[in-house]
Amino acid sequence: MAQHAAKGGRRPSPVALIAIVLVAAAVVVALAVGLSGKSPKSKATEARNHPTTSASAATTSSPTTSGPTTTTTAALPAPAAGFKVGQVTAVGDSVMLDYQNPLMTDIPGVDVQASVSRQWGAGEALLQQLKSTGQLGAEVIVALSTNGPITQGDFDAMMGILQGASRIVFVNVHVDRPWQDPNNAVLAQGATRYPRVFIADWATLANQNPQWFGSDGTHLAIDGPGAEALASLITSTLSGG
Image (cartoon, rainbow, N blue to C red; front, side):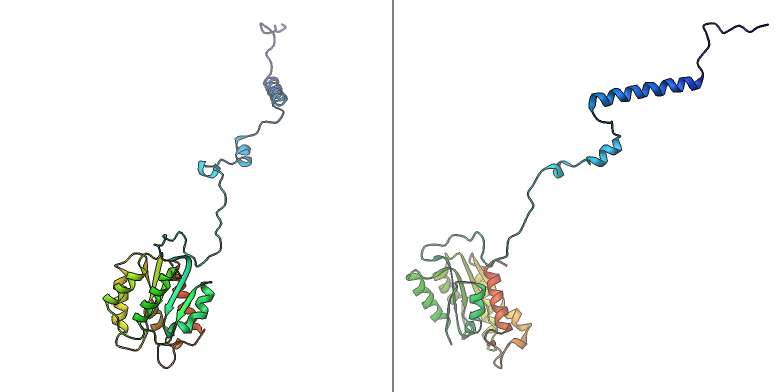
């Protein structure tokens, strides 16, 4: 007996259903392309082409660059009346004569006032004269106390002239005399009592390099390695290094 067809007609086969789904998907994709003008991308593709950035990274900033290093101190305090802005004055004894050329190279335009056997009191008189005539720089280097003992009273008298300068550097001493350590103590202690006063610690650097000195253990070969080192130390101290 002949079989009768199932009520409502024949059901589509599974293969036919898959084909219908694929066709529908293709139609959706085609419509999406037509509307957007580009193929849809997966999240992985979008992430690769447009990586996510943090808020700080997304902020545009100019690259940081550093300019050439100089020995000039930035933003120096303004000096009191009687000091010449933009001028550096160096007053010293015969040791300063050994390194005056390297110092003038390191600090262009420095006014070097060095003299053999100059005592602390003579240095005071010279600084007072320079100040009274408007020739004393707003930055001052004092390299005295090689030729005799000094006291806290001497230091205070010197600061009576120099207080108000933008920056003052005292160079301590390396000398084979009984006043070496007491003088260096006076300088160190005095520097703690006044603003804008700094110590160039020549004594420590000199003790580490005895080869720099002549037979007297105090003077240096003119423009030699010790002289260059001392000039560099003073320059660095003056610039706040």
